[in-house]
Amino acid sequence: MGNIAAALQAVHRRMAAALAEAGRAPEAARLLAVSKTFPAEAVREAWAAGQRAFGESYVQEALAKIEALADLAIEWHFIGPVQSNKTRALAERFAWVHGVDRMKIAERLAAARPAGLPPLDVCVQVNIGGEASKGGVEPGAALALAREVARLPGLRLRGFMAIPPPTADFAAQRAQFAELRRLFEQARAAGLDVDTLSMGMSDDLEAAILEGATLVRVGSAIFGARSKTTNLESADDAEEHR
Ligand SMILES: *Cc1c(COP(=O)(O)O)cnc(C)c1O
Image (cartoon, rainbow, N blue to C red; front, side, top):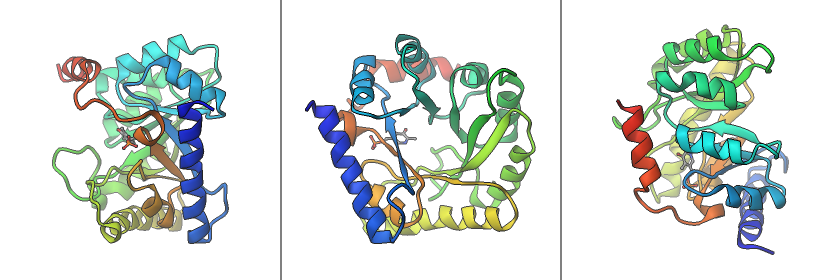
């Protein structure tokens, strides 16, 4: 078995253990493999091992990979910050966008979603932990934004996403994820048809699953360590901040 197949198995074992500990069904959380900075061949290898949903964070890199892997029926998720000049590409080429954090972005995605495709699945990104550098709507404004997004044709609001500040403290991880879970529960209580809590990464997926994550976004535990600043990353960032 290749490295990626073995790593995928190990992640599935971690997820299964956390789901069992939480008393949740084995299929209650699914795995999004985050392939950013890794080549198309790595995605192909994960596909061969049964992985179907992949996450990307940089638009130019993602579009090249989508092109190179067009022969596979991959479910592509965009999990990076959404720049308004990139909404057309996202609406045309992705199945999901996790980083919707303002109405302007949601409207542009909705307007650009091709009529022949099913609605674009979206999550409202919430700034849990209050880091100034991170994207996401303030928790207090998230429910109102979710309500507005849910009304847009061309989009289907699936739920909420967060990238809390990393901490090695398990209780602190759980407390941050619990904040997003409470928001999710409020949304459901308010009548919003949401089914997705996108939270948890390689280092904290257990805490996320214990707090109700339905989708964990895992990169390095599957594909290996990423170099800190890749050329791809800086090139795409420069372009997107222009
Ligand atoms: C890179 C990234 C991940 C995966 O992080 P790992 O620590 O490699 O598992 C998950 N979510 C988002 C939004 C990311 O940008």
